[in-house]
Image (cartoon, rainbow, N blue to C red; front, side, top):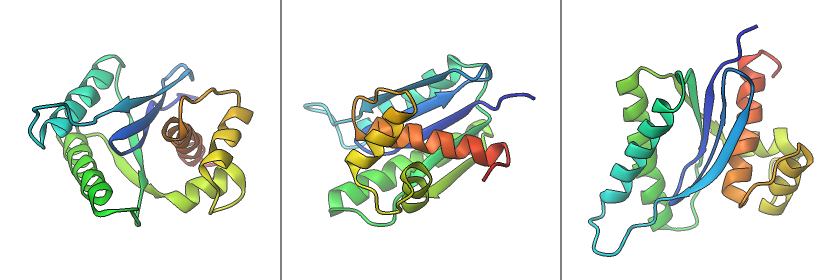
Length: 157
């Protein structure tokens, strides 16, 4: 059975990412898109788009992009940043004809920990139990999302 290449993203200024390639290997990390000094407000999104393109070029292809679908934010700035990242991600996916899907936060947490309201520490612990060493909770969320998306793609969920 062919393994699908899936890119999972926890969107934000500190974006968590995880990718499973066709050979089943999982790579993950946490990438900062914090605005640089003297940069215009849109530069973080241009750097995000370039980063996505770099990931695509380093892999044969990406069959699916999944992202954490957030419906509630701690503040206005976080909501604006998330909306910008999501807009650029979905436009990039449309441009490259890559299917994409948002998955609600509670769904990801419930699948990873058994609790839809799991804490950041719970998520990190659940991902560590699967043998990963996430640098932060953003990377842990992306890894958990990747496992869920892979199970969905294989019809296990």
